[in-house]
Length: 132
Image (cartoon, rainbow, N blue to C red; front, side, top):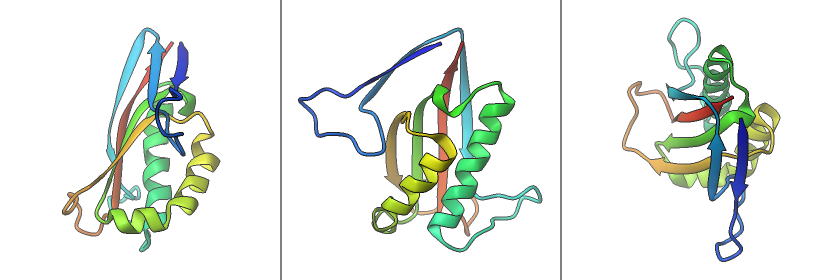
């Protein structure tokens, strides 16, 4: 697989995401929304950074099980119940991302939602990856 991150100079410099990702490969993996569920199906963590770390770990676990790596991620959408809190914690969330997934950022969006499936969930991540 080849992946090219495209960040045109005509757009604001991206921080923690890429404006576009051009990927070529033979397999596309669609990743279901992941929250901070543990193996018993219970939300763990009371803060946004705690839940983000677990949700991202769950997303990456699903990706690795399908044969991919974080560098294969082409698109991730973050659903947050409080975008203001997400912005407040953005530096910490960025560190969590870099420690777990590295610096090859996919195209991303953060969307505020009224609530998630599990009422205790503060954040959910989904996405897709392109594998060789």
